[in-house]
Image (cartoon, rainbow, N blue to C red; front, side, top):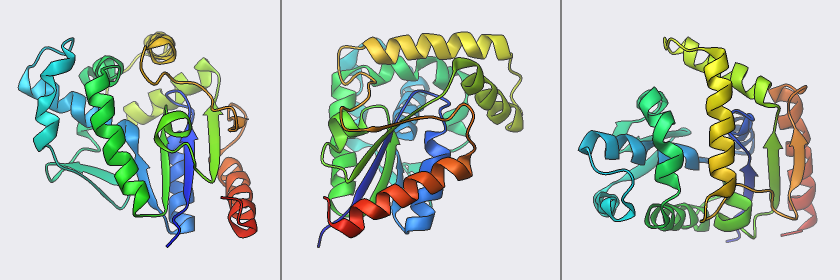
Length: 222
């Protein structure tokens, strides 16, 4: 059986997860939020109080269980949706995700899922590393101001006290860190479709990508 994959990359707050969830539901595919896996790893590392700067301290991943159910990540059978959005997780996830042992482990798991399912997968290195042969690769981005406001609304809705200016600085810091890290940095794949979502809503972007993806799949361009 031939499985299909749609890969969506981009910086924090670009709308990747929302668009990916929408497309996965419409296509009947499995949605894989790779960022959630790195966030969950960060949460567990913080809980275990390990040295986050030590790449070799993440051997707990060998006995950690990840499972996606209805688009949500469960780690060791615990729903991570709310826990993953804690500020201390956001503050440290870029550091954790920069460690090659962590990336190697999670990329392998992501590739295993894609090898056995039709998937819509989003992250920062999907088109360039995880799913190099994806049917369609997309790079979503937006201005820092727009992305910060989206994150502000998300965190506020979860009951967090946040400052918009601080969020803008956090996003700039994460952009710089993610784009310049040594292993699997955030960058647009050469054959990816570039979309700036600053002035577009989720429905517009989702519809555009759905039509593009179906054209490719129906033509057998995979």
